Length: 166
Image 1 (tube, rainbow, N blue to C red):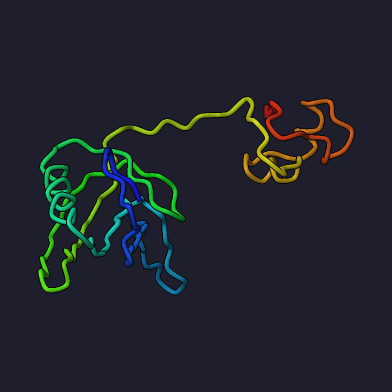
Image 2 (cartoon, rainbow, N blue to C red):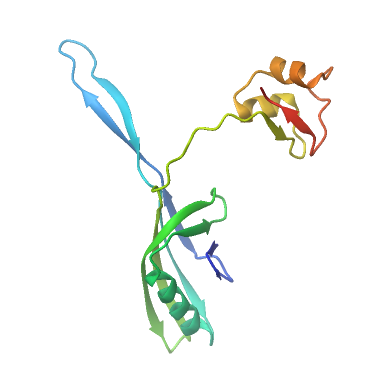
């Protein structure tokens, strides 16, 4: 796991990533209610872990320093997409008998930047991808990919190849 200039030498043992949406549910007399997805909530990342050894106090101090900064930064978590997030909570407990610092943290996604929908005109093929994979990834048809790139079969795409989407 990594946030700004801090990289955990050992990933925290417990990380919870919560993504959610808000629904507006309107009752309709005599029929099923109507539901509408009205917004996406910021992703919340919480976790806990332990720093062992002599540098545990230094690591906790550095995280406290990052907590006091008011800007957001990129948070990289194993198994989840990177998110730009605010560091909003950090606490730790020193256990001198075991020479360790137990800690807990919380991050909240920064949703302040307006996200514009972008229409891709091309992408680069990733390792092992074919036209079916690219079509699924980009939300286009296999036929469009084959026609736009003048390929004979869906499997004639090489890793790193520039593939026209639209």
